[in-house]
Length: 350
Image 1 (cartoon, rainbow, N blue to C red):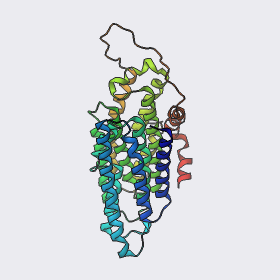
Image 2: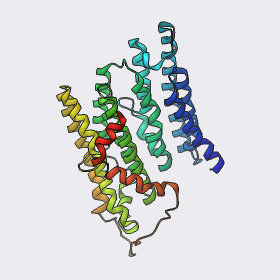
Image 3: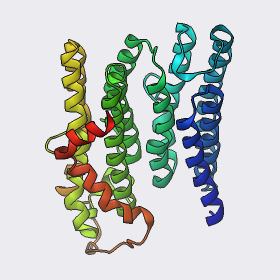
Image 4: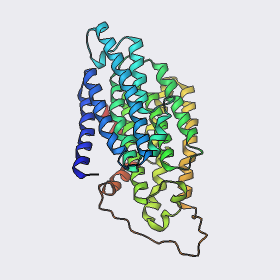
């Protein structure tokens, strides 16, 4: 892609999200969402083959459906309340419609079916943007809506955690596994959204750090399937040493950064006497932990099938001058060592 066009598209992505974050008017928020959607479509369709066109079309249809639903609900709510303010939605029907539209944009269950297909059909760079940056604007709009129906969020949150864990068990494509991982992590955020917006925001930040580190690592190792992970120890031994810790952080094991949001969310649910919800979420997290352990095992304790009489490559140094590779150390540090700083981070968010 032309570098100047890439700069324009990435700038449009940033401006669209910034417009949504800074607006209190539903029309401006909708406009920011649409700018972000239109900016990422050329990135999805850059490899000029039918698969890329199909994925871009699917993504456009899903996002356009969600945006149309959101705009329809906002237009019908404005005459009833006399304003377009995001934070003062009170009509239960239109509030529920807007909530479902935003959840569709996020890819949460049971409206998740587009997410694995889209992530699988795009490059790792575009998949990183879809899994992280494109989640920020819809999630912040959810945080601003004060009259969300709590049982709706609870059902969708628990369903997303279960489906995100269950759906990734039999996958061999790494991008699909990361898509189901994204669904599960967003389910944790939605589950606690009504009771503690600070915890939901903290969980979103940790999720962005961990997912960014994972996508950058896979990009650097040039791995797209589980079998391709078995050769990383001969190509990038340092990454092979650190990557299992990164995957275990995604699984939420202590003392890594990914443990902190799950720990605090379970604690908050217990204090609110939502014991069954906390129990289901904790047990469903074991499903996700299984495929993270599977990836760690494939990367560190498995040898690739080698039926040819030739030697494996040893320590092939990939170029580290790319912007994504330069961001890898910082992303790994935030993914692995943020747990001791959790109280300070929560204080800043609150």
